[in-house]
Image 1 (tube, rainbow, N blue to C red):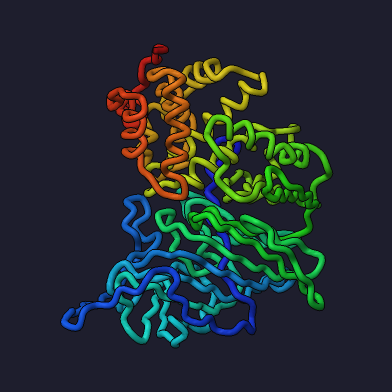
Image 2: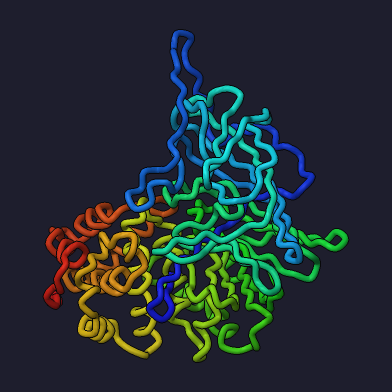
Length: 485
């Protein structure tokens, strides 16, 4: 995520889950995993799954006891009434013997729940949907849950992180945010450690566009309603899902065999936003030369105009940019930042929120690389200027352990990027760029921690780097300027 003007904006929105009203119940589908039946003498002890994955920063985020493979989301949204109606089908595998399990769902009224086509009991505890299937779910077995719901979706708000999630806009809605967002419009295991694929259908009044993640699968109109279909077949963390509904200037193309879908809100005059995101594939090609193959099946970007969205977010394959980034003219720096996240943050995702510097430090460094590539500054000069200008709080806040209140603060971004450059100076360019490509390749579509990155950097470079990372990531004083190797 790119910050705007020093203010932390952590949208809490997400990408979808709903099926349209009137859709039939899903048939049981156990393709998520091969059945693993107990022997005739085996005994099972079924228990509820945990109401959280145990993240030290956000203990209630996500849920335990299962792993999601796919969300099929079909939703119908009417901006005039601000009403959402939908069904989400969740294909998952039990990782424990479950008597019940939780899904994250904020607000909205649940009308029915089935598990493998059989009605299941359900209850709400705050923003948790507790599902009790008719029979226990055996560890290792796949299961399919279908949830029907409706209501007026609302954003989530925390004092430390701000507002995010589903936002009703002047001509539609937008749903995105970090670190929590998806649960405002579909039931979800809302933590980046459980990535899944997504198939999304969004039905809106004819004349409006509904943008989602991944490959566009076309749109169809029936009467006064148009259904837009999207598919993201690479595993995606839930906070990287997005929806943007409204009137947009849409441009489409193909690049290297992949679809390109860009959308700029019609509220803005044509100009800098259009020109900036039109360079998406150019920036992506440059980053590919440094990071390795582009990791997804589609390209694109969305520009929205809403005063509540003063940030940019790396929503997978199609970043969303607040209009304020383009008020002073073209801005490919923010495009470089969000596209770098497609490798670092989206394809390689964090296992826990404490390690967010892995996303933001590398993406900020990509801005420095792009500035050098485009001739506006060298990476070394940007590093030295950032080092000299960084105020005390940047050095007192360790980016490797920033705390919830500083999760999107300057230390994570700026000192995170300085850590990356300090590594480069310590190991030399050959090893450094090999580290970046190896990290993207070996961890593609997965999750990782700071310890994983340190171990890989040491393996690729053949050097012990614990002192460097301790000083730059976990120290509370300004490290000495590194010397080039």
